[in-house]
Length: 418
Image 1 (tube, one colour):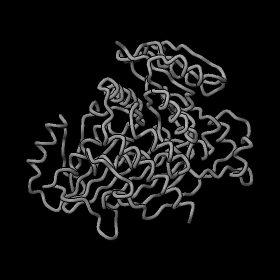
Image 2 (cartoon, rainbow, N blue to C red):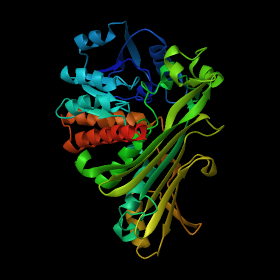
Image 3 (spheres, rainbow, N blue to C red):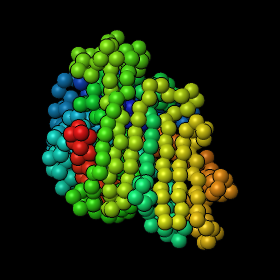
Image 4 (tube, rainbow, N blue to C red):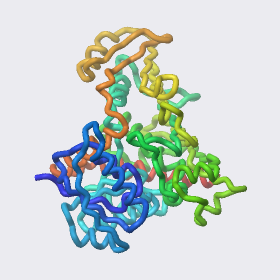
């Protein structure tokens, strides 16, 4: 029988992307509970766009319950017992704690917190069912899976370690305040620019990279923050946002009063950038995340990744120089064992091609192997439903989530104490 889903106060487009494709495991009637305002209106418009598109239209039917008492109404109705949250991040964990106590499974967008004050809520909801999971789409990337397979081939890569001068794992990214989603300009809510609500450069995109580092290093490991994590350095800085760009991206005519502490000479100083250096299970990891103003024409977000091992270095680039397609490049100290490793990788990743390139090898997967950004969200929803149907909350998943956000909260405290 299809699952009945409720969506509460959908203030971020990630809520809609979970419904980007048809899903026969989900009842086509989706219940939307929200206070009145532009946030829920934009969600409805995105779903209508998915239903009305020419290519693979969806068939969702929204049953909207709009009102200031929407949360109480949702809890009283208890339709299906699964709630989707994607919107204001600051109050997220407190809301999740209440839903957890009411017996709801929750699939919630990242980040779950904006500061360390919310950590007691995190501990409470990760100790026992019902299930709570964050929307981490990166694990549904074929290129990320291939990356992990290469790094995990000890005969080729050896142990991770960048030495005293460089981190073993390095993640970089540049996102953009003005971007396209589903081919349409994204309208952000004005509160997106409030770091107390959305989160700053220490907790937002950074949460994805901690998850990736955990995936690479831990597998099914039950992480513990005190045992496995050590913050080495952390810093954050601002991107100047002119009023004209704020207007274009939100539709608002002026900076709201709650942003005034961050406005200098008519320009919003948005603390959306950050760098964190930490050790995870003894391995040095660096994460560097920045935000630019406007997405490049014909492009999108820019990503980079480097893993340094005893015998090899693996890099991933995704930006203008690669036509905004992921490109994996492997440099080896020697080629011994490469043919055998390739056989293993090709079994797991059909269509994998390798070619000599720039002092190493370029690894390519067929374009069809990679789910795009938007299409990864329905895959995440299916993964969550698998856990709900199995009536299981793996202990390693709960520990991974708890460790991830505790680490980020500590890194933020470290940065603010500088």
